[in-house]
Structure formats: structure tokens, C-alpha cells
Image (cartoon, rainbow, N blue to C red; front, side, top):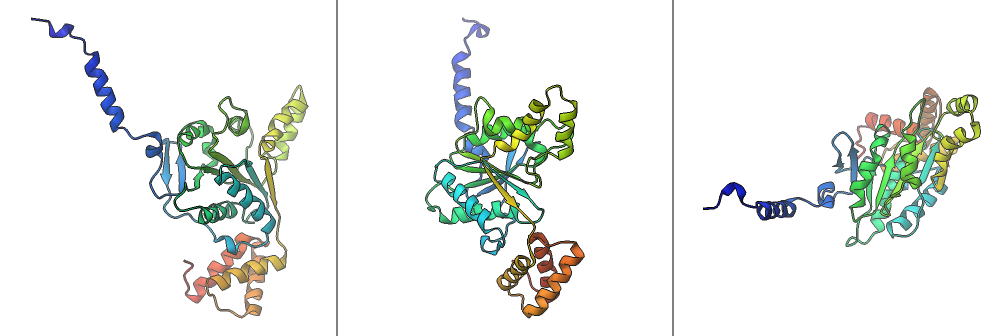
Length: 291
């Protein structure tokens, strides 16, 4: 009788491994939820968390940023059609609709896509999770759909070296950015780093030009720069009136403008965010829901 301890277990182990592979989900199935078009990257779990309803403003309600909207829409539509498109940096004044524009354009492009074709995905990564970008890209590389990778309020301070990971991801890495991924970021800074940080590099580096160039060149990795600036009073009133009409907030134009103007004074400036905050206050007073 043969000794069971001497039997070759390789065929059995191979069959077990093959069975487990058949049972295991593919990378695409593990990453995505059917019918969901937006996700948030949870770096601590290494997972994409589905977002059933995206918090966004209807594209038609955005005012004062028509040029920026047209450019970003065309760039995104080309990307969704598998045509060449650029990474985009939306920079400038706070509250002027940078992140709202990215989210609304995602919805608008999907509205134009053939329902039977692949949907454009929106994947948000938080600023503090930038070092985990390579892990996220490994997941997105296996996805068959085009993906807009979005980071809101991107900036770097002090000794933060995670910007180097972003540089490599945008263009410089050996693998490069996956062909089905494009990167959109918003920032209050055009060069993503404060002036005093750049000046400090000039004063302490042995080769100052090289040190400064390394930090400033991060913005150069974005082929598309879109600037957002503080709005004037007419644009601010246009935002207010557009929101009021859309949500059926019945108030005489004169009173609406007077209240909106006073609201902006108490907030110290005019912007799309200030306009929306006023509309929320007005809707509450009128007993209306903003659905």
C-alpha cells in the first residue's frame, strides 16, 4: 500500500486554485456597482464606494462661467468618445463653481451618450489620499469605462512631498496614466503651492531654479488651465434670479435683488456659493424645498 504522505497533491491544489479563480470576481466587478456612475475612493479600505446620488447643480443654473463651461465640456466629451483630451486644473476664486462645474458636466456628457454605450464614471479622491493614487489607478486600469478622476481643493503645503506622486501619475511614471482615466482638479492656487513655499525654495536651495521648477512644473502637467474670478453684481443677480425661477421662489425682482445684495454684504463678497446660500435661506422662509 502506498504511503498517503508521499502522494503528489499538486493536481488537487491546482484544481482548487482554478475553482477559486472562477468564483472570484474580476477586478472590474469588484470595483464597480452596476448602474452607478459616481464613486468616492476610500483609501483606508482600498475600495471604491458607490454614490447613488451626486450632490450637484444643474448645468443650466451655472452663471458667469460660460467660457470655462464650454471648454471643459468639449474636453470631457472628447474624452468620453475615446478621443485625445487633457487633464484639467480649475483654479481661482472661492465659491465660483469650480467643483460644481465638474460634477454638472459629468451629468451633461452622460445625458448625450448612447444609453447602450459605456457610461462616463466620476471618481472622487480626497486631497489627503493623493499618496494612494497608484493603488486607485491599478483598479481603474481594469475598468472598461472612461473615468474622470476628480480631486477638489487640491493644494500642497510645507514639507508635503505627495505632489511628487501626482506628477508621476499625470505623465511621468513608467506606466503612465491609464488611457481610460483623465484627471480634473480644483484649487484656489494656480500653481497649487503657496508663494511663500516657492520663495523658501529659492532662498534655501543650492540650485534654486531647479528646486522651484520642480514645484511649479506640477501645474504644467495639466494641459488645460481654466481660471475662475470673482463675479460682478450683474452676474451675481443673474445667479440669484436663475435659482429663484428654477425652484419657483416667488418674490418680486426688486425685493429679490435688494435681499440678495444685503446678503452678499453680510458675507463680505459675491460668488456662486453666496448666491446659493441666500437661495437656501429664501426657500426656507417661503416654505419651499430645493429638490
